[in-house]
Image (cartoon, rainbow, N blue to C red; front, top):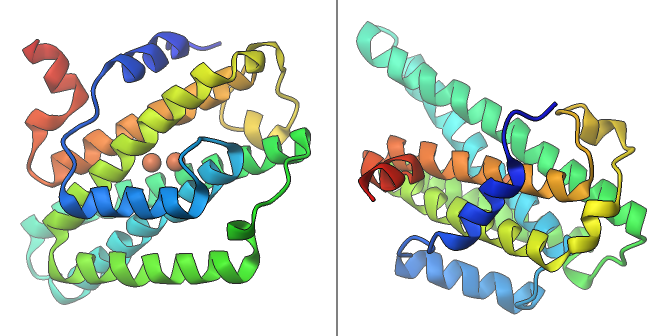
Length: 223
Ligand SMILES: [Fe+2]
Ligand SMILES: [Fe+2]
């Protein structure tokens, strides 16, 4: 039983303007559109999800490195462990998004475009691993901000995607891997839940960047 009104949250995402993106984020989103096309579809969201877990893994590794060399600082390690635990949970959550989309593609018989060919995906993933690990190493705060922008973008993509696919409300979910997360009445709810997860990732990233005023919760309070 859902205690959250997923449809209301999806509408809230749709109605809330995107955050102001930095030039780096704009360039990243434009490059993504160049590869996948501007329209939203399952293969595009799958590519987003294959990338989405990567920054969290970079941070988990970075935190582990800091914990190894900074073990004497008992106060600092609590903060580092907090980021590491969040990063672990978030990357698992992102992988569940990828699994759910993969299941929907199989159900719908969706053809895989060229950018989901293994060598292409490999190249894109490796490039993003190098980018996120470098940022985690040299400028962790900037890494959190970039990720918050990535997540804000993803949240709006899913809100729009649900809007464009009203037929999902009539399509029940049978795949156990999707239902392992929670009970879903239909596929519309699955994609609303994914969008809400992205909002939570967005807000947590802004908090880690030291910008709590940018969280949706805070912005809603300020209105
Ligand atoms: Fe995701
Ligand atoms: Fe996310």
